[in-house]
Amino acid sequence: MDPLADALRTALAGLAPGPALVPFLSTVTGGELPGEELTADYWWRNVRRPVRFADAVTRALDRDTGTDTDTGILVEIGPHPVLRSYLRRTDAVYVPTLHRDGDGPREAAEAVAALMAAGAPVDWRTRFPRPGRVVDLPAYPWQRERHWHGTPDDMIVHTSGTGRLDHPMLGVRLPAPHALWEGTVEPQLVPWLGDHRIGGTVLMPAAAYVEMALSAGRRALGRPAEVRHLEIARPLPLGWPDPRGARLQTAVTPDDGALAISSGEGRGAPCDPVVRAHVRTLP
Image 1: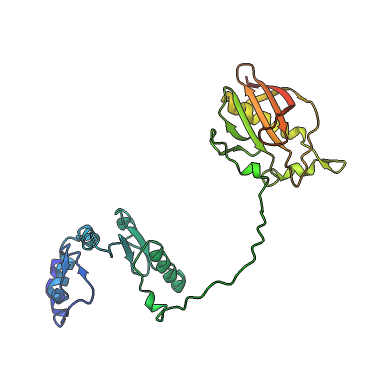
Image 2: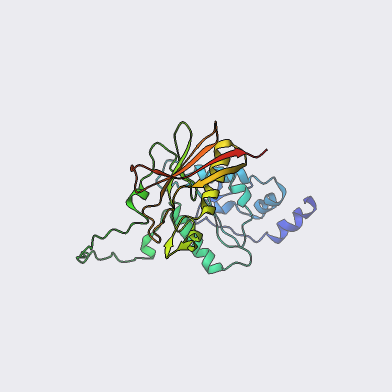
């Protein structure tokens, strides 16, 4: 770049920089500079000398440390993010403005919203130049109606278990000496069960029991499993679309592969066996 020095200084010789209206942090010096120093010679040094971008960014983040305006936010103002990979290496929140071929007004509004969400100081007087008038809310007759998704029992998370759904039909795995799951059959998770109707009643199909047995066997034995000697003791009506009686427990004892699927009417009520089978790992 040295051969361009005289030409660049000559072209910029007429510059008459004045005081900066906002703090100016230079990537030439790595620190803050008065606006009057942005002369032709400064811009030649900007071309020739190493870029001290990291120093300038660090200085920008440190200059207001300990004040109420220190928010740790960096905004890249430009037609397309080019500094993203560098600014994201800091601990500050990075917010771009525009993107190439993007919707400018929408992206500018999104940038403002991102800044507000990040805790940037906002001068609300630009939006609300006059104080608002405080009024009382109108009285409202609350209906006090409860709207449950499922049953109240479904909202209770096992405090001794993981509380996470392990399988749409097995439910939550419980802490026990052997593999044990409990859950409620939810129409939202397995809507295809509603197609198995006999005499207008939705019944638990054999295919669902096989799926439960295969999934429980694979989880209990740690390998793909097969089901043998599956016996359905009695039909299980689901009562859809409100299956409040379809609480199932699935138990597997890994030592002998015995599997039992039981059903009860509510949490804490005894469960009666519905299906018995054996599972074993595939040879």
